[in-house]
Length: 636
Image (cartoon, rainbow, N blue to C red):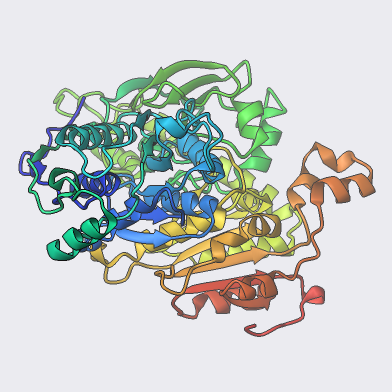
């Protein structure tokens, strides 16, 4: 299903006159097409073979439409583009690199975009066909290098040397339109365009006619063919293909029981909260689910769930789990709950690559609406005889969620209640979940790292975005964090630590973009462990001529990878665990960040909240350490 295409949008455009370089001609047409199709940002890494794309993007008519960002490291460029796309998938960003090994550095971002279903346009420059497989410099097998991960790929041949033909330009523009349509389709994700360019890679500047004739005569050479070098000839208009946008799928009924729980994994969105609240069900929501709030939320559920699933006779044991998003954090969820043979698992996902790691899902629906015997199926039925007072009381528990129950759900009036006793029992059941979870959480030891993570969580409000790295900290928040109104994002597609700082920088650049018209765009904060921060130090390198993201990077420095101490590796010999898993680094992270141009401070958990509350533009790095290890360095 698709929405009607925007019929008011231009049906095409006239490409610029010839530049004297077929490669630059094609690049100009590509950028014009991308601008017309809604692309707002491009991230470029420096290189020679990709130079035509630089000259094309630098044309005055494009500067105000597509923002250019430059990063010296290709991996940082790719994750910056991924962050821009992640903030607004309707306007995906482009990442551009030169040929050779540069293309390999994009692979991690392409993988994350694929698994997280984030649109991303990957554009790699390449040598023409005659220079491939013959030992030419910086030439490798780029075509198809991301094949298993992309929604669309094309290897465009090099255009004519001095003037790209109309057919070549139409082919390039049509291919770009197909790529963007695939990236933003029903199954969004990365696409790859491999563009071959021949010399000249720069626009050709025509000398005055007399000078050109004189130079040719002096050299004994014939005058150049005017058609071959013509730079002022007008072009035919190019039709620009637009694919209508996909619409949300129709919701399908899913059974609801008194012991159903809703599991909201990464990216579940508000639909998970709506479904849980509408039917008064416990909501087990990961921090980056987009549903970590509301009356059904059970904070601190992981430890409780482990106990519940270890006892088949436990009074809180679920008999059904409705899964939305992609759960990746807790073994008590993924293994114990979703892998239990007495739990009916229903997955809500519109895509064929739905999450079912335990392989026990009985039913998959594209969107859900509850089929609940405790609620009236038809509020217009005037034969309902439920006591009005009881009906009003029972309905109060469902009002906060609105009327939709799943992505794309149609509105339903659920004011007519058929079983007030059942809903009252569910409210008591939900309260029992919350009390038990709070009791267990309060008895768990609290580390300084957890205190730091909660300070960042609590500092983030409704206009803010919090980006979480893949470390112990996100699990600390899953166990201990309360509701939040902030937008929370994490790279849970592959749960890697690649490019996390660059990703957050891209999100910040998108959030602060003045073209979006936000008077107060809020703050973007990144919470990472020390190893994640070290793994993406180049994400802090922002050139002096580049727009700096308004971003707070909070690094919890505990001298290595604490996460492994909580896994089965904790039983390893201490020397082996320390060297090969927790991997102490001995790096002064504040000094390293300052050396790369960031405003950097070292502080303790006691002063972190105050530091985060102080306004300040630009890129700020807060390195949080234990009190006894702090040097209390000021801004370096």
